[in-house]
Amino acid sequence: MRLAFAGTPEFARVALAALHAAGFDIPLVLTQPDRPSGRGQQLHPSAVKAWSVAQGLSVIQPQGLRLDGRYATDAHTARAALQSVQPDVMVVAAYGLILPEWTLALPRLGCLNIHASLLPRWRGAAPIHRAIEAGDACTGITVMQMDSGLDTGPMLLAEPMDIADGDTTGSLHDRLAPLGGRLIVEALELAVCGGLHATAQPTDGVTYAKKVDKAEAAVDWQLDADTIARRIRAFNPAPGAVARLRGEVVKLWHAQALPAAQPTVGPGVVTGATAAGISVACGTGAVMLTELQRPGGKRLNAAQFLQGQSLQVGEQFDLGTP
Image (cartoon, rainbow, N blue to C red; front, side, top):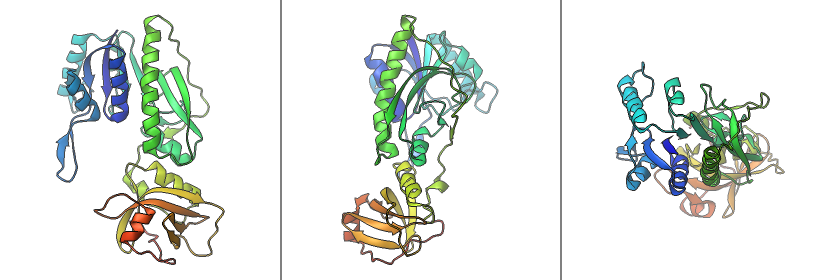
């Protein structure tokens, strides 16, 4: 079976590596163009491109795939490249571009997507973030046959995974990515022998995981402790939750709710500062911050953070937007 692969971040790289290790022929990889990052804003390849080049795989980086769109030249070049390798199937994982009809129809077996949720819950761009933010107890991986809708295609394989109380988007991602790689290999092996069967998604329980906006990362201390703690973990490692303290924007990387504690002080007020964590009053309950970062500094646990910055009980985080 000949595969084309379309993906961009580490989640996709893990799947691509699993397919490669399983012995599938992968004559063409599509990924997003190099992007500027870091202090120097130099161009860097995606995780998928860097790995593919190291393995000697052929890579193309169209800016768009619509034949009549702004990047029509790129789209026509991509179509010619795909037609030349004649893939039986295209595997898609966190690619970042919408696939137009010509792309879905080109491979003999269509396009299969590795999606990081149990569909139809959390269709869309940020399923891991939104599952943690919502307090879901379980998520998983769904391999689906792509259609023209937003993650609406029939399901081929799915496997659940529990979300731990302290999970961040980063830690959950690192467990889901290998599961996605294993399931796509299983799906294609079943397809080879005709044992892959599709099931329509349920019409009930549909939710949408919209892309995370940086503006969402600002902590609103007037919310309840559970919501604040979940959001801090959901936005770790990106974009990182932020709050203002003493005029500085501090990043908050990890927190746990202390719902039994109902402070008598107002939201955002520090109620405790020990090596175990920094307790802050919320609209309801309190959270304990256990990992923080000052501007230009490193991520530190609470004990390390307090060594570099004395913090007194009664001080208050700003309630406005950082």
